[in-house]
Image (cartoon, rainbow, N blue to C red):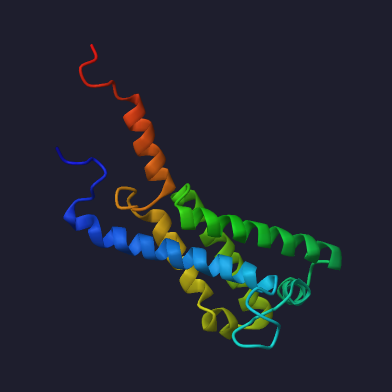
Length: 169
């Protein structure tokens, strides 16, 4: 008997591609959050963008100069929480489609802010539009080839629990 969760051969490339998209988007979000808290090192070292939360908030102010200092703190904190949540949900495969749509929206908003307040080269050099497109494609992918997701594991567990035991009348 064929496992109903096994993707047909035509969907296997989608399975690999969607897994890769989930992992790189999750890594991007989680890496940015780690950088804000200095986990990649101090500002000005290696590939560190911010190195601490104050430097990150200064960058948020650059991208949203229309916000007051108090609102910059709120926006920066909210963005950090959202990016951490999206990183974890994509990594674990929780509500993949919704997480991917939310990721696309966050990334597109970030890319547009970079475009308008830092110039067109900034989001292009950082591939933010590319990441937004990848998140959009992940959101549009068929659900069948989404491997290694917590959603799929929970669905499989629920389905087997709902099935009557063999020999039961």
